[in-house]
Length: 244
Length: 244
Image 1 (cartoon, rainbow over the protein chains, first blue to last red):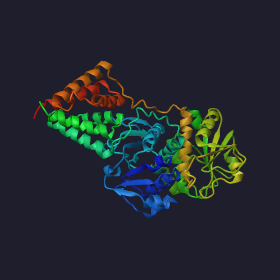
Image 2: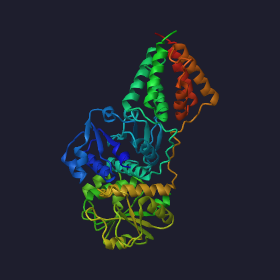
Image 3: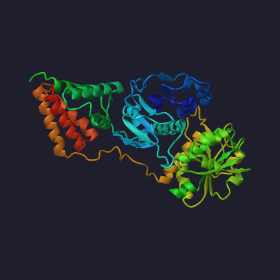
């Protein structure tokens, strides 16, 4: 269990209210989580954050402040976009409990992240697309607006239970063994997109949803490091044959 | 489901901070709960409570302020003492998920209550003895002190899921919708293999396990018909660009 919780980071994007950062730190600590990443927080460190953290100030003190979501996801192999609502995006969506079970399997050996948007708008589409899954809290459709720290509490709670559970049926044969990190997978997408533009398959003026569809496909599979190496080699060689 | 949530009241005993009452109201409303009972709140109504309630002010406006816990439990057939820790008391104790399942059964036809103590000491022994069960959130023993509203959020979340009957939104959104047939997928593999041989990436005399690895990757994802169309177009265009 301890590895699952140690390998799980909470990422808060562009948080407006410092109090929510403190409350999120407290929510984390009660569930045994300690790795907090803050992407461009509006106001941090702050007295209000420290006050609301109660006795979880150590989480705040060790928090990593990052300029970009990509930096906060450095080394992460599974990033989950946490949302109170489902979205019209081509990213696999599941409820928080199912997502926690998935996260726990991966976090047993590799870094994972739960990513939260700001208080007003939640996650942007660009932020969601840096994640492999969307997880939602099944809130009342009439009023699905959980406070940010309350949402962190629910996700952290489910992750803790999944970690405690051991009742995760690990399908070891089909589970990817050595997942590629965020940067590695993004590097593949960048190469693929450039190749598709260069060869004329993708018109950058009218991209439609081609790259989103590719991301959705490979996110479902969960790419291993070695598979990314192969895919990159395939794209490179198809574009520039070793022989003709 | 609606009866379960309508019949479930949240009782907050001697709350110190008005902000927590507002945050609890918000947590309730996101989970479809609306009946809030306040036993001797220190400071209510208050501007801070209203602010933290966000768009759940109707819950505050209809809150019942009571002089005693007994009054708040009037008509209730099952009262659950909510706690972050287990207690040395002769009252049956279970985790929040198990308790929520019990509550949902009773609340289908009769009023039930979730009872929370104040921020400093939690529930007193006398208060717990007015309840039939103790329910705990399995928090980190090192730091089990959830914020009051965060605890309300977790209990309300579990009650909502129990009311929904475990029928939480499953994995259906992420399941591929229109899977490609066996022949279609095989057609893609045949094309890919031929392209890899022609361009020199794959040596048919020493194929290693390249195609097996590709099959394993795409099998994990489960290819949709439309995705196969895109992949075939990608391979074709990379090999024979529309433009150069």
